[in-house]
Image (tube, rainbow, N blue to C red; front, side):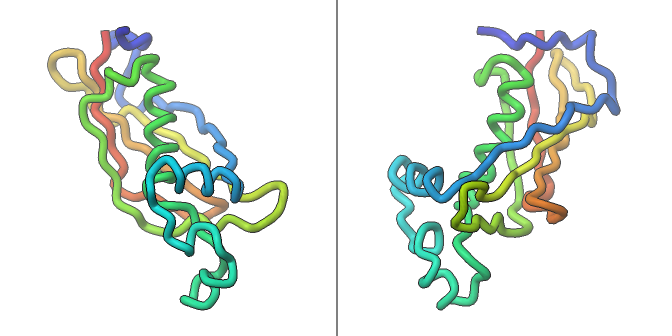
Length: 142
């Protein structure tokens, strides 16, 4: 596959519309199984509170994965992402209800590079709290 987005169709400053990703406790349990990260802070409310957290929190890598999902969906090809990195700046607290939490990811074209590559600055929030900082992806476009 190749990226569905064309280099000549994007401009610096162009915004990528936000997408909401729901996070429920079940998602965290499934992620724990897939990743092998069974730390109790991600599924046991009693334990999470005992160690000083407000409630169960999403895995940092799960949160990062939602930002990765956002950029690969935009590009149209996971292989088009040639570099991707974030810093974790806050937790995604996931209450034990039918709604869970929401991670909202958006982006902006920050720079156009040579060889039809673009730098996308990503924003990820849970509620009003920014949960990822310095989130950037370099994407190879067509």
